Length: 265
Image 1 (tube, rainbow, N blue to C red):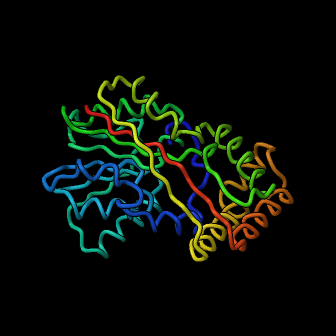
Image 2 (image 1 turned 90 degrees about the horizontal axis):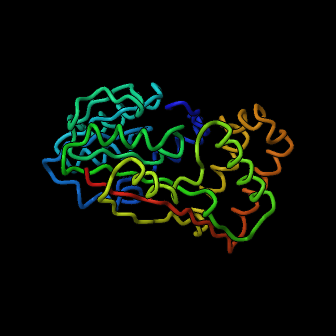
């Protein structure tokens, strides 16, 4: 994606998480801009759960993805939900195949952290946004993630992830940088906000911990750690075990901080 590799890949453990995301838990900051007659570009749609929610709120959604498999999954989901106002294109945020000012809203969720030049990506998103429209982005911030109990294996996981993400050309602490990137891209009217995901109930803890325990050893992250000499298979097994131990803790708590920006074009 725009000169950087997608660290997570599209292993089932990754997509299983992506399919749970909704417009309400992942794009609530954008809801005031989603009028019934709006045209929306959803950049990096993944398996399409947010895309489908957007399509139920606006006139039309165009979605782009660099992964053909993810794009196919999004198309299937929208078909299952009988949404006929969505079109799907294989394209990259670095070179969007649309004329200037084509959309009222241009949205990217958890995309800019995986892009080699996020400022250029925001400029391209602005190019295809109509004057007075909105460019919106939301990204997690790995350094700001916090959890209890503070198991050493989980600290190892975060350190390894941040090293690998940067080695692959991305920025894992994107959330705190979104405002600076938006200003560098030339936006002058920017609304910065934050929101969180929290995993602390027995059910959510088991789900979140189980996902990451699997992702650590089976997703593309594992391959990348080996490629960059960041972790051995024994290291990854230790990280995976820490995630499972955390999930079993009755007082276990995990919070993901996200940065958000709404930029007026």
